[in-house]
Length: 175
Image 1: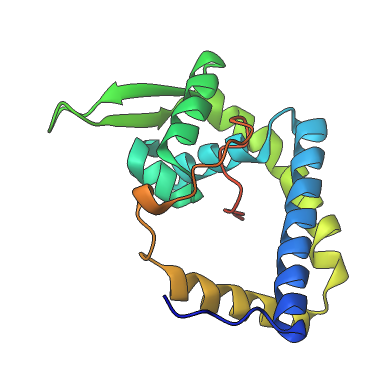
Image 2 (image 1 turned 90 degrees about the vertical axis):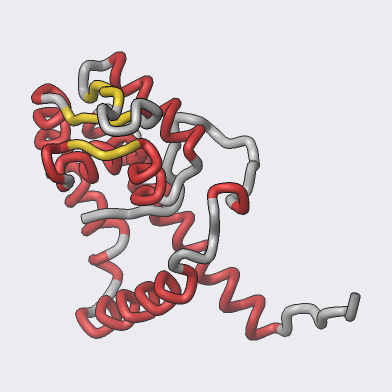
């Protein structure tokens, strides 16, 4: 196997700035949302995507894709949300193999109560530090990177690191 050169100083700086900033912002939003709305960002994202879906329902695999999470993390998070009465699971009548996660009225209410805390946190932790031009550039770069990686990773290729299961989504940040 040919030896690949190591990252140069500019490449290391690019990666460190991107990864560090993304982690810092997401961790701060997580803390704020947990404190102010009583739920982790991962649960908020699941409720958000379900609310945005037709009939407030998604297959578990679609939910994992939407939140950029592993299926096992989504399964755990959905089980916790189900215990809280925020979602329910329904067997897919068409194939009798898959499951749908459905947002309940209680889940919709929890999402509506959490939305202001989420918006305030994102504005305080991200938006306030960027000019309008910076925000447009950051959005452009994020969209470029997302497009470059769209559909390139199967569930089998996703990392299998042990992480906090209550943090079902570490990458999706939604409106």
